[in-house]
Image (tube, rainbow, N blue to C red; front, top):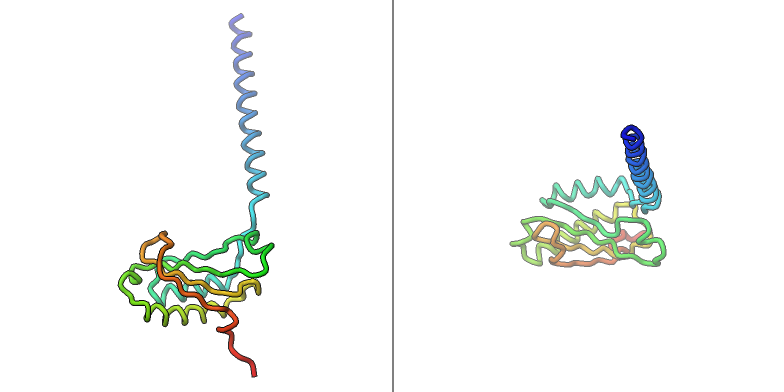
Length: 146
Protein backbone atom coordinates (compact mmCIF):
# COMPACT_ATOMS: atom_id res chain seq x y z
CA UNK A 1 0.00 0.00 0.00
CA UNK A 2 2.81 2.40 0.86
CA UNK A 3 4.55 1.80 -2.44
CA UNK A 4 1.36 2.38 -4.46
CA UNK A 5 0.62 5.61 -2.61
CA UNK A 6 4.17 6.83 -3.21
CA UNK A 7 3.93 6.25 -7.00
CA UNK A 8 0.50 7.84 -7.07
CA UNK A 9 1.80 11.03 -5.39
CA UNK A 10 4.80 11.15 -7.75
CA UNK A 11 2.46 10.81 -10.74
CA UNK A 12 0.15 13.56 -9.50
CA UNK A 13 3.12 15.88 -8.78
CA UNK A 14 4.55 15.22 -12.24
CA UNK A 15 1.19 15.96 -13.89
CA UNK A 16 0.86 19.25 -11.99
CA UNK A 17 4.40 20.32 -12.97
CA UNK A 18 3.74 19.35 -16.58
CA UNK A 19 0.50 21.37 -16.55
CA UNK A 20 2.27 24.52 -15.25
CA UNK A 21 5.13 24.12 -17.74
CA UNK A 22 2.69 23.79 -20.66
CA UNK A 23 0.72 26.82 -19.41
CA UNK A 24 3.90 28.89 -19.17
CA UNK A 25 4.95 27.96 -22.69
CA UNK A 26 1.49 28.77 -24.07
CA UNK A 27 1.37 32.20 -22.38
CA UNK A 28 4.92 32.98 -23.46
CA UNK A 29 4.18 32.11 -27.10
CA UNK A 30 0.99 34.19 -27.10
CA UNK A 31 2.66 37.29 -25.66
CA UNK A 32 5.76 36.97 -27.83
CA UNK A 33 3.95 36.64 -31.14
CA UNK A 34 1.13 39.08 -30.41
CA UNK A 35 3.28 42.02 -29.27
CA UNK A 36 3.44 45.00 -31.60
CA UNK A 37 6.58 45.88 -33.51
CA UNK A 38 8.60 48.81 -32.26
CA UNK A 39 9.35 51.63 -34.65
CA UNK A 40 13.02 51.15 -35.40
CA UNK A 41 15.04 53.74 -37.19
CA UNK A 42 18.84 53.54 -37.17
CA UNK A 43 19.37 57.19 -38.09
CA UNK A 44 17.13 58.19 -35.19
CA UNK A 45 19.48 56.66 -32.62
CA UNK A 46 22.50 58.46 -34.12
CA UNK A 47 20.68 61.80 -34.03
CA UNK A 48 19.58 61.16 -30.43
CA UNK A 49 23.18 60.52 -29.37
CA UNK A 50 24.29 63.72 -31.08
CA UNK A 51 21.50 65.71 -29.38
CA UNK A 52 22.40 64.22 -25.99
CA UNK A 53 26.04 65.23 -26.38
CA UNK A 54 25.45 68.75 -27.68
CA UNK A 55 22.71 69.81 -25.25
CA UNK A 56 23.79 67.83 -22.16
CA UNK A 57 20.60 65.77 -22.08
CA UNK A 58 20.49 62.78 -19.75
CA UNK A 59 17.62 60.85 -21.32
CA UNK A 60 15.40 61.08 -24.39
CA UNK A 61 12.03 59.36 -24.61
CA UNK A 62 9.90 59.38 -27.72
CA UNK A 63 6.27 58.85 -28.38
CA UNK A 64 4.85 56.91 -30.25
CA UNK A 65 7.05 53.87 -29.77
CA UNK A 66 5.03 51.19 -31.57
CA UNK A 67 3.81 50.88 -35.14
CA UNK A 68 0.27 50.11 -33.98
CA UNK A 69 0.02 53.63 -32.55
CA UNK A 70 0.37 55.29 -35.97
CA UNK A 71 -1.19 52.60 -38.13
CA UNK A 72 -4.78 53.87 -38.34
CA UNK A 73 -4.09 57.60 -38.04
CA UNK A 74 -3.69 60.16 -40.80
CA UNK A 75 -1.48 62.55 -38.83
CA UNK A 76 0.64 61.99 -35.76
CA UNK A 77 2.67 64.26 -33.51
CA UNK A 78 6.23 63.09 -32.86
CA UNK A 79 6.89 63.85 -29.20
CA UNK A 80 10.30 63.89 -27.54
CA UNK A 81 10.69 64.10 -23.77
CA UNK A 82 14.12 65.60 -23.08
CA UNK A 83 15.34 65.19 -19.50
CA UNK A 84 18.17 67.24 -18.06
CA UNK A 85 18.87 68.97 -14.76
CA UNK A 86 20.14 71.94 -16.79
CA UNK A 87 16.56 72.71 -17.84
CA UNK A 88 15.62 73.62 -14.26
CA UNK A 89 17.40 76.97 -14.45
CA UNK A 90 17.13 77.83 -18.16
CA UNK A 91 14.87 80.57 -19.43
CA UNK A 92 12.28 80.02 -22.14
CA UNK A 93 14.25 82.09 -24.67
CA UNK A 94 17.27 79.79 -24.60
CA UNK A 95 15.00 76.73 -24.66
CA UNK A 96 13.28 78.11 -27.75
CA UNK A 97 16.60 78.63 -29.51
CA UNK A 98 17.81 75.12 -28.60
CA UNK A 99 14.48 73.56 -29.52
CA UNK A 100 14.63 75.02 -33.02
CA UNK A 101 18.08 73.48 -33.52
CA UNK A 102 16.86 70.14 -32.17
CA UNK A 103 13.78 70.22 -34.44
CA UNK A 104 16.02 70.86 -37.44
CA UNK A 105 18.15 67.88 -36.40
CA UNK A 106 14.98 65.77 -36.24
CA UNK A 107 14.21 66.71 -39.83
CA UNK A 108 17.23 64.71 -40.95
CA UNK A 109 15.61 61.52 -39.60
CA UNK A 110 13.71 59.53 -42.17
CA UNK A 111 10.36 59.57 -40.35
CA UNK A 112 7.03 58.33 -41.61
CA UNK A 113 5.17 61.06 -43.56
CA UNK A 114 2.29 60.78 -41.08
CA UNK A 115 4.37 62.73 -38.55
CA UNK A 116 3.34 66.30 -39.28
CA UNK A 117 4.47 67.99 -36.08
CA UNK A 118 7.34 67.85 -33.59
CA UNK A 119 6.54 68.37 -29.92
CA UNK A 120 9.54 68.87 -27.65
CA UNK A 121 9.00 68.65 -23.90
CA UNK A 122 11.93 69.92 -21.84
CA UNK A 123 11.74 68.26 -18.42
CA UNK A 124 13.78 69.08 -15.35
CA UNK A 125 13.22 65.83 -13.43
CA UNK A 126 13.88 62.41 -14.88
CA UNK A 127 10.71 60.49 -15.87
CA UNK A 128 8.45 63.39 -14.95
CA UNK A 129 6.87 64.45 -18.26
CA UNK A 130 5.86 67.91 -17.01
CA UNK A 131 7.91 70.71 -18.42
CA UNK A 132 8.20 73.39 -21.07
CA UNK A 133 6.48 72.35 -24.31
CA UNK A 134 7.53 73.74 -27.69
CA UNK A 135 5.96 72.58 -30.97
CA UNK A 136 6.97 72.93 -34.61
CA UNK A 137 5.20 71.95 -37.79
CA UNK A 138 7.40 69.63 -39.77
CA UNK A 139 6.64 71.31 -43.12
CA UNK A 140 7.84 74.69 -41.76
CA UNK A 141 11.29 73.25 -41.03
CA UNK A 142 11.79 71.67 -44.45
CA UNK A 143 14.34 73.44 -46.67
CA UNK A 144 12.62 75.19 -49.53
CA UNK A 145 13.34 73.84 -53.04
CA UNK A 146 13.98 76.27 -55.85
